Amino acid sequence: MNAPATEVAARLARLRERIAAACDRARRDPAAVTLVAVSKGHSAEAVRAAFEAGVGHFGENRVQEALPKIEAARAAGVEARWHFVGTLQSNKARAVAGAFEAIHSVDSARLLVRLDAAAPAPRDVFLQVNVVGEEQKGGVPPQWLGALVEAARAAERLRLRGLMTIAPLSRDAEEVRPAFRALRELAARFELPDLSMGMTNDLDAAVEEGATFVRAGRALFGERAR
Ligand SMILES: *Cc1c(COP(=O)(O)O)cnc(C)c1O
Image (cartoon, rainbow, N blue to C red; front, side, top):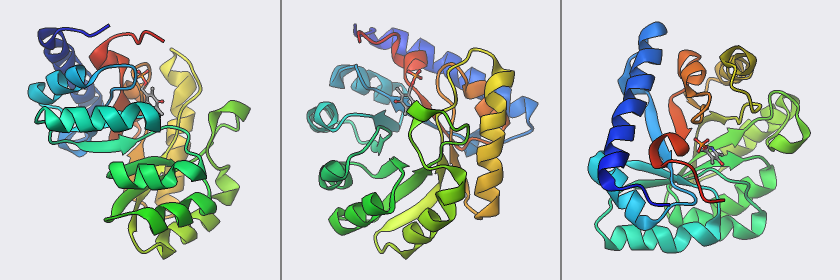
């Protein structure tokens, strides 16, 4: 399933154009949007191709898959920042805090405590919010966010960067936009600077609504085998 390096570079150029166009529509500076290339389902070789094309941030959602890949990528000369974006169980907190510079999917105080205790160096964290109230999405409901923000601010080795959400699955930008807007309003209420939102299908609307981190997989690496 690995796309050749030239293909990854071409896809990256198209993806950057999409981000730039969305920034243009919203009168935002594209430099304020960091692309996190979600490499789940793709090899360390694909990571290396994207790195060589200019990507500096990678995302993974499963610890077991990510650890050997990060090691292999490093051995191949990839000097990137790694972001954990998947559902995170407390018993994996130590491994995640050890290998990832940023964790986007923190949704409990218990997890914050574990990550803080295990972090070998300061780590960036995002609190995942379930803004639309769909059962399967993960994340805290907005009414619990205040307590979680407080817990994150009390942590010693975690830097609270902002909020993260996964929008409802839809191809219609106007259907996902309210979720992104709600996340932006929550972040403003708690004076948090960063918004991790937008994936391959919906990153245009996310950027228009203020995303500072977009998490794109398929747009860069193509379809995943699973
Ligand atoms: C897989 C995944 C992405 C990337 O999704 P694509 O549709 O491949 O862009 C982004 N965020 C999270 C949390 C993911 O699990």
